[in-house]
Length: 204
Ligand code: ATP
Ligand code: MG
Image 1: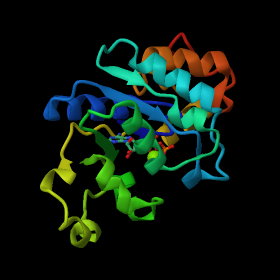
Image 2: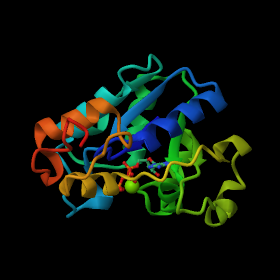
Image 3: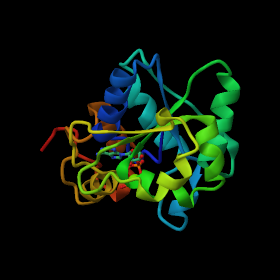
Image 4: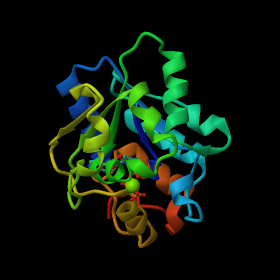
C-alpha cells in the first residue's frame, strides 16, 4: 500500500512504489488516495475524485499498480489505521506493507491508534530529499516487534513534491516530467491549482 493525498500524484510517489515493490518482491502496490486528510485540515485540498482519477491515470500502465477507493469512499477523515483495517479485510491472506516517505514516517507517532499500525502491516520508510530518515523515536516501542515491522531503504532521489507541482501549475510553469503526461493533461483539463489554462499542454 502507498497512501497519500496525491494532489497531484508525481514521479516521486511512483518511483517509491516501484522501488519498494522490486526490493520486497511485492505482487501488487495499491495506491490509496486519502479522503479528507486530517493532517491537512484547513488546507486547500483538491476534490477526492480528482485526486483519485489522477492516481488512476498515473498508475494505469503498470500491471502491478492499482488504486483503492477505501479512503475516498469512507466519507470521513482519513486515518491510516482505518486504511489498513479495510485493506486487511479485503486481503485477509496477504502480507501487507505500508510504504511511506521519510517525512510521513517522522510523524507516525501522531497518527491515530499508531500502536495498532504495526500489528496490521509492515512499514517501509523510504528516503526523500530534504528529510532525514530516522526512527529513533520509535526504537523503544519497536523493540517488541520483529525486524520486518519497519525497514528503512534508500531509493533513487527525486526532489519532487505535490506542493511544488501545485505552485508551478498556479504560476503556469511546466509540470511536465514531474508528473506523468496524463496527469499534466488532467490538471489542465480540470483547471486544478488555479492554473490559467492549466499546465499548458503544448509544453511551453
Ligand atoms: P504535499 O507537498 O502536498 O505534502 P507530497 O509530495 O508530500 O505532497 P503526499 O501525497 O503528501 O505527497 O505523499 C504521499 C507519500 O509519498 C508520503 O509517504 C510521502 O512521504 C511520500 N513521498 C512524496 N514525495 C516523495 C518523494 N519525492 N520521494 C519519496 N517519497 C515521497
Ligand atoms: Mg506530503
